Image 1 (cartoon, rainbow, N blue to C red):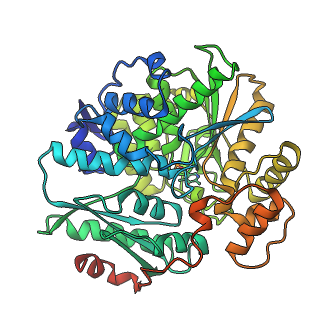
Image 2 (spheres, rainbow, N blue to C red):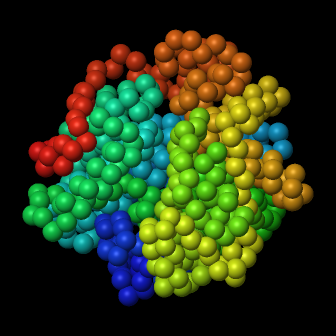
Length: 481
Ligand SMILES: *Cc1c(COP(=O)(O)O)cnc(C)c1O
């Protein structure tokens, strides 16, 4: 199946090539030329793994053996066999995406991507090693390490800002086992680490190297496509619970950063699933809320630090895919992206804004409101959620209050509350003294919610990757791997 760049339809690749390349050579993102015909009702009938197999086979047909790849990616790795359970909480349903090996929602995609990448490599007869290079502000690094460790033909190197990730996030990374992994702290902030990684990609262009560089970022269609499955899973769970009849529409509220998760929901709708409104939830970094309400995307504003750090973002890369899907106009997308690069903002034509607003709605929520929601949902409904999920809950409440839309609402939960124990404890009025490990234990003692095994077992594990380097030494570090 042909894919092409969102910025130029003559830049093409088949689906295996698109997964191998990640980003198109012109800086655009790969999209399928047409969304394939898909039997969505049949897809709803199988297990979560069957759903993933059907969806990925339809979107990535040039990658063979999909049932086997899905089996390897997911079997025995998640807390529950359905991978992403849906639980009723008050008037909403919460879709728990954090039951994977690192308690991050990114596990759903990053468990699958290594399988897709190695199969694509084989299909293309490529025998050089791939080096996955990632800068992380916390969650992506560990989920990628967990997905890629000990995968033959692939190596992975993760940079994180020294002192810029939580104690538990650091422990998750520096204790990583595996003979193909490297983890290193960089003196600087996340932007320094990310810029360093971009510079390494640029410096390695056209160089003779013993490996080929690739990224685990959601610009890669191989990371985005596995996320479609859980929208089908949630829909099926609502059917099984008797909350909807086949064909009824369901709304989804999605805590959003890079726009990958919510775009997967739009692709699920494109494959036929009866998705109603997609609600884009932001924290105080509300670039997307402004955009969806006004049609102007403006990144010229300070990046605020919040209690939901995975959503602290000013440029949401995957929005480019939506602009392309709704306009079908690669020239328009190319010109908007150039404006964003050069001027820091762009405004979409009215017609395109109307199409966006017909399917999406947006709201934002500051840390105070997120804390209020964590406390209230816990005390009144007995459910413990993290600050990212709370922003999704806030947007869902706002949406219902302002539109009166009574279709069933699913709130996507993107992190375990134990990933952010201080913020969660504070919100429910608990004692936040001590280390993060102490906070996890307090949270569990107060709420009775068990600490995920992978987090509980971290303390005391041997630290294998304790290096710290200056940001201008990152290239040298990679070349010496
Ligand atoms: C990555 C992440 C998000 C944002 O997802 P996008 O696909 O980037 O929009 C939200 N919450 C958590 C906890 C995350 O790790």
